[in-house]
Image 1 (cartoon, rainbow, N blue to C red):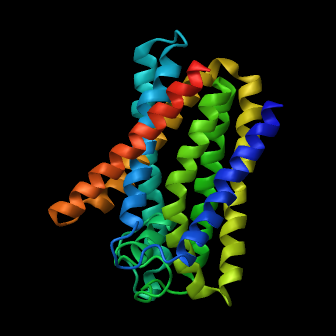
Image 2: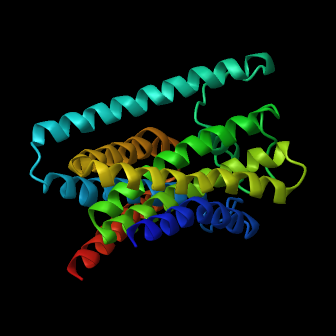
Image 3: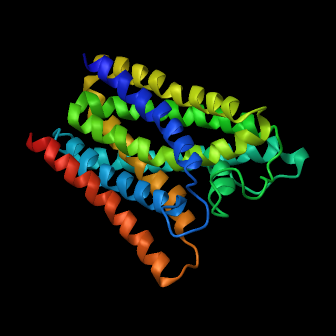
Length: 283
């Protein structure tokens, strides 16, 4: 039963986030105006990830009885690991596009999408044409698949610890993948023959989340003692993505009103996850 729930949740987070991103783009999200834009979604996602890590996953791990020193060491190693993974993708991406004159240092495939979909405030493909060469579409898909696989493992670890914790973790992953996939779709639409082809390609990359969920479940069934460490690694992933990826995109010179909106959406993500997690544990 747990495995079925994990597979459904990972598919919802992986593919559902792609279709939700496409739906929001079709509705005009990301165009200039006073409505909800990508910056608001990024703020919401960052708040949700930080709250999931610090209010849900880490407390669950520390309640296991494992030495706090060991868990903090795991957290530190996790943060350094994701930093090095970033550097490795940056190095690979820079060499891959060296001949195309695109060495701007955006390593993540999803970050590449961010630059196209969010930097200029255009998430629907009607903004400036991406500077990325057409071959960059495959870099987006590869990076997305690896990222989604990792998300699946982390979601599975949360479900094995507690069913309600898993649901909140899956929702947090979905929240931060929506703005990522909006950027991915913008890039893929430049290298695909049609919008539907781009949507199918990104959806297939999102489906890899279920494979990560399956592997995570199998591993934890045999290594149940490692569950607290998996939860801490999941926390380090969420914290790193929020602080190194999402929040830096929000650090722009804005008006006082726009800055207030960013802060409010950030707090909304934190409050939403904390309240949902608290109610889930109560029931």
